[in-house]
Amino acid sequence: NGVYLQVLGGSDNDNYHDGSHLIGKRLHDVMEKKIADRFLAKIRLALSSDRVIRYVYQLSSEDIKGSEQLPGPKGKLWFEAHLSPVRQSAGLPRMVVWMAFNITELKKTLIEKDRLIHELGSARKEINALRDMLPICSNCKKIRNSRGDWEQIDAYIETRSATSFTHSVCPD
Image (cartoon, rainbow, N blue to C red; front, side, top):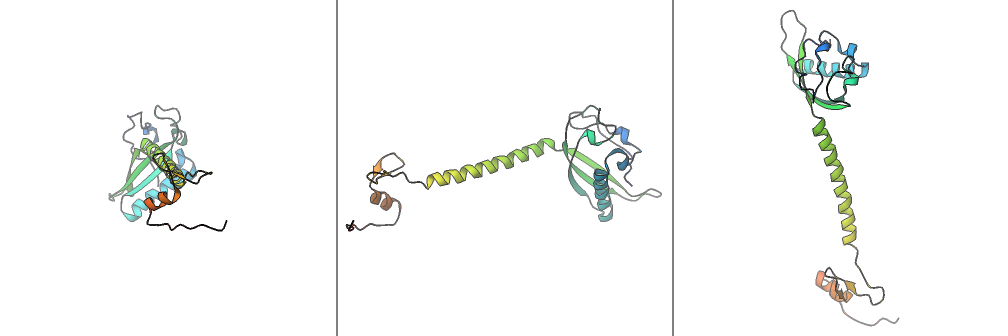
């Protein structure tokens, strides 16, 4: 039913906030309905499937009533949770152990990696476009090679492909 029975941890104020004030409260008592419903759905999935559920989500201390002024990291944080079903005990409802790991730095690194990959892809397209450009003299039609020397166009193409030229004179 989404009640916090025990909260362990919270002493690492660089990565987490102390959640001991949540014990005995329901998810819907301490967070907005949309977030609480999502969390409860994950709990129910872990219980109904009887398997560990992995869940990645973003949350801040401002999202949890009573946590806003607690010492700990500021802003939205990324978490990876592992919801592990607990075997039924006599007289107790089904429960899960919700282990949350702060993955904010990992998430930032992955976002930066994706940005760099996109940047590299754009640079590669630009390099390929530049590589496909052939510097040619607008007057004599010689080609400038990679060493900076000017070659006759037919010699340039013959040394870089299987093409051979035959020469003739056009009417113009």
